[in-house]
Length: 302
Image 1: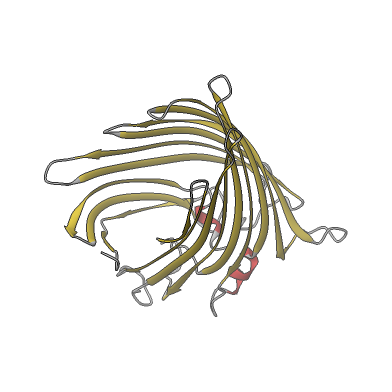
Image 2 (image 1 turned 180 degrees about the vertical axis):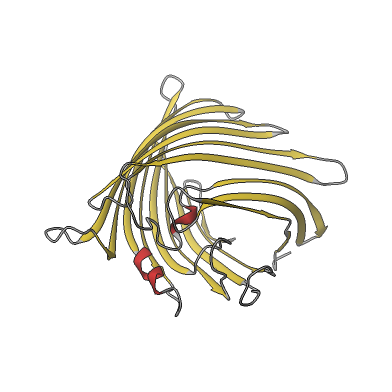
């Protein structure tokens, strides 16, 4: 992160991040795969302290993912994309022990279609999200209730309605989470989602339960454990595949346990045992994946 401006009530910073993930995949009939994923992101962030009113946070950024030699299902890997986004967040001062927050963000996502998966272009979307929340507690322990709306336009997906030909979704979500920040960091959450569309295919209802724990261990090691369990049901039954390749992880269940430690002044290493349960290209049909990746985080600035 680079600090461009720092004053008593204002700050401006720029951050950039990138990584590469190499996998070896065996067991396919025609040939085995060696998928490689490159990811990168950059963002400009502005913070304005509004004194007795609260704090305003603005962000503009872009991210990209490139995937080479992406295997077919049932092995899920996120497709490549280029995404631009902007957000504006406001957090009020404490009012009788309650702090209110408002989040608004816009995004434009362009997915990279491949020669043998041209359907990835169908995931291109433009979206706007608005969320409001209220939180109780102090710096050590906080409970937050929230609810929000999201509108999404898919300019390349048909709706099967000649009078309204392109897919438009409206999504409502609500939930609560509890955060404890001490020597051991704990966060638990519950969230419900209802998605409605002018196309019958993607209409669904989902419920998610999440938990995150981070704790220090001996020898400068750190333990991180995460679980996200999601149940999903479709409103309408259809006779054809409901999902475009790439939608599989929209409501995936994910879990992992990771142990990491610093290896040098600007290099961290971690070993992770992970599990993913995501939909196949047929809605309501699932596959599972287990993995043991080695992760390295290098910071050039030392």
